[in-house]
Amino acid sequence: MSSESTYTEVMSEDHEHERLAALAALISWADRRERLAEERADLVAAAWRSGSRNVAELARLARVSRDTIYADLKARSINTSARVQDPIGTEAIPREQLTAESVRPLARLVDAVARPAFGRTPNDPLTRVTTSAGRALETVADVLDPPTDQGPGWTKEELLPGLAAEGAAITHHAHRELAASAAPDELAAQTDYLHRAMLHRGRHASAQRVDVVVALPIGGSLTVRLDRDERGWTTLSGDSPLLTGEIDGLDHLEVQHALTVLSQVITRNLDEGAFVEKRKDALPGGPAIRHRLVPSNED
Image (tube, rainbow, N blue to C red; front, side):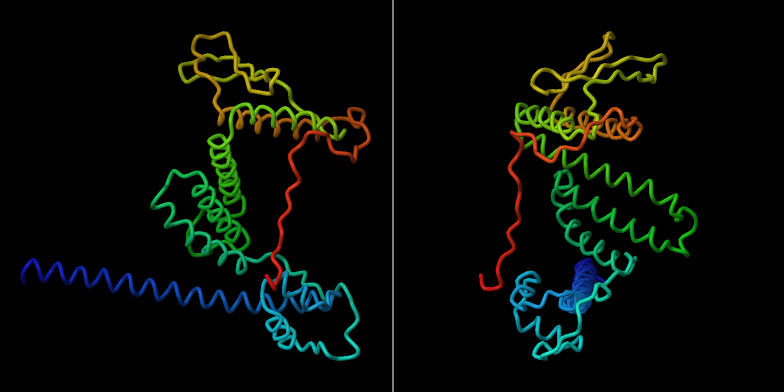
């Protein structure tokens, strides 16, 4: 057999694998679409039975046509033209617990979206956020329904640290993207506002500075002070020549996040005498309130 024919056979096998993988992905998508349609019909019926009986509104919120809403209601034995409708009751609202069967397809969908992007730009912060989100969802599914045929390491206590690690990775890469997008003065002003806003509410302590004693691989320890200057920018100081470098945007965001976590822990352990009555008014000078506009079905 010539090398050319062998090469052709290998290429044919690779093409066949790609074809089968594409067909499998298409079948999986069709299955997901059918399941989503069934879930949508359940939710539409639940909304109707709980009192939301405006078909146009339901269509707008579900982002489907009115005909689809009518079909969903009919599939759930709801006659929208009947003079007397079933009474409104909270028992009509689905209250099923989260299940692995509902989470795992979502995790696989996220993975299917993130994997090609990761192959092209593996260090892109938002790609890494999406990848970690998919892994986190997969871990949630494993926690809800641990595999029984994979050997040790699949108990809830063994899985949850990995879930926390994926959450930390999402935070880290989101900070990377923010540090690359915003100027230091913007980040400092945001930190200063958040610090003042926490105190303004009356129910939270806010860390201003902290001294950290770190053990060194060479032996001994080093005391480092993490503080903020008058702008709100993080400062790092110590009395050892081993401490070098300047704080950049990512350092600033991660230090302030750590201080926020410390503030939350300390707040939970403070006596009620440390607080005042919760204020309802917002501190002036904050960011604009964000709204998400849901497009109308007629748009």
